Image 1 (spheres, one colour):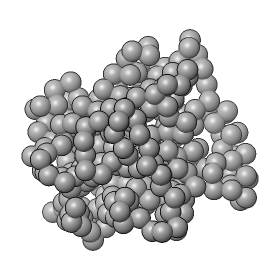
Image 2 (cartoon, rainbow, N blue to C red):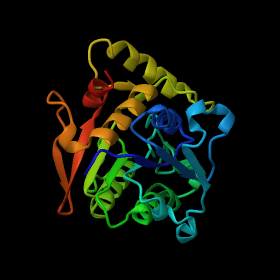
Image 3 (spheres, one colour):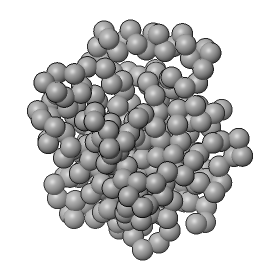
Length: 259
């Protein structure tokens, strides 16, 4: 794959997505950027470089064929459906924030959550795929595993597996830990307490926490470099779900990439 010039981002109104969109707009590498989602960012909140560079599409995930996501023939597709912190369980549902715009609690059931957090994600990535070398960057969650007994971890693992099976030339999946420096208005006491603890411990280890700005920067860098261009000091193992390989970047290496 030659050096990428165009990028599609799905989920740019979430904590990480907002930061990543700014990274893509201000990056000299990308000359075309498209933000697609159920909502899009107000242009008043975007860097001046967005003019003439950014395309925005309000899409219906139930009718993705109408969105024509593949028309842009994007070099890199970014999907930022990352949770903030996983802490609470109510009625057998893990309460998390999905960056495509819902929580398991708000979704109402595991089935509805799966539809939004997995089906919409996978179908959008499939809709954006064209017959050329493309790179797919997905921000997942720690402990994602399609065979996990925990609903949320299993759901994320199955999403990873389905994305890998789409056959992108280069599929790279981030598994960040707790997200710091968020601006959520609905943060819970338990989340704030945990982040206070991880904030202290992060002085001694980079495994437990990452700022959304650093995660976004790492995702942009990986989108530009791809698996083959990662710096030698970055440990990014090849994983395999369902017979398809993908590159996995954990919290520690995401922090390292951000500098």
